[in-house]
Length: 162
Length: 338
Image (cartoon, rainbow over all chains, first blue to last red; front, side):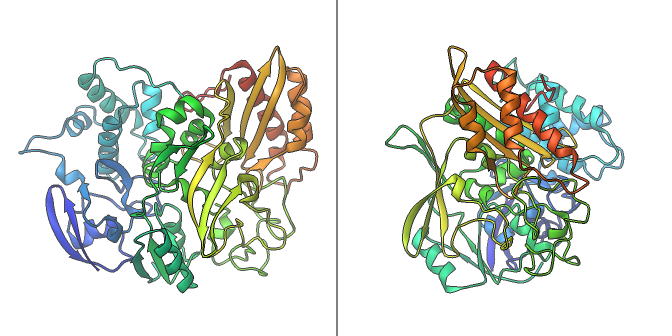
């Protein structure tokens, strides 16, 4: 099937077998290997990308079902050589060790901040729970995200819990 | 992944027509469970019919003051919808107890109902499993069965239904709207999922050519006295060992209406009408909740590794009813249990 994926602002026409995941389309067909294949079963979050602004697991997504969609990967976050604030914060806080989960953590954090539902450390932890870090860099990942959220927003009304 | 044909449905009638034409076809929307099952070789569809472009993404008021949730509404949009937050917070809480934000962004309302069990043996194609391969046997009954069912099991299957959302929908008396070749029908939530019996390969009573189009919530949302408590091996992003949805209406200290549904303990969301009717009219105090819990678990049976679940379920029921009665529902952000 021939589809168009708009990846990081660039339209790409691709001819793909229907069983190609979005993750494999990005990595193999477009050479964008920043997005990582961890478990390949939606359990680790390493493959997280933003599709039409929402964070999803690209390993459980068929590329042909995203024909025409806007996809943002880790490669698209820096603008004109300037790192995205979340990328900057991950470096400031040393929020990784091996780095394998980092692109997924960063894309997930970008989605989290756009959603605007995490205001406390507990809420950030809960809403980042779809991203596993085998090295256990969680305290620094949390600190990096807290920094960006506190820079970004004046105190917002608390979500009513649930 | 196993190879398959792929097509898109242009409207509901087209989806039904395409499904009826291909016995090996499956609908795909969020794909969070189905794509994984195809990767594992557990599901082997010959065709996937993409239904994501159907107009089933709306949330509307119904004539009787309830809500109709389109089958394609993503779990995250549903949980955070202002009407759900205000009128059906039990449903919101249950959804937010499940999966991860990424998966909730992908997963749809209709698809959530059709999730398959996470029994390890169902996933492991090298082992016997009556659900995956009818007649081959159940590896879980004498195997590693810590996650497995304690209610409504059969000698053929002790798998559990994995959904949190469905536990709340069961408690709220939701209805499932489905369309097939014979037209549209409305199915009571309690009649939607099945117990394993001697046909554990069938999870639901949905017919092969039917597509879920919507879920309907009745007007009563129990927004004052409710709680969803999910007990699991880690605080987030894990399936339930035991989950309890409790919803009460209390008048002058007495229980006027009670709903109690359990997850993680049976092949379907477990509602117990006998325990509910016992609660009706009783004082909203611990003794009533203990009696109800004992009643729910009267026929519970465990399989060695899950022996602990019976007492865990008993305590979780008492705790959840207490939280509901006190108007202090379990938070899904702050996991401390109070």
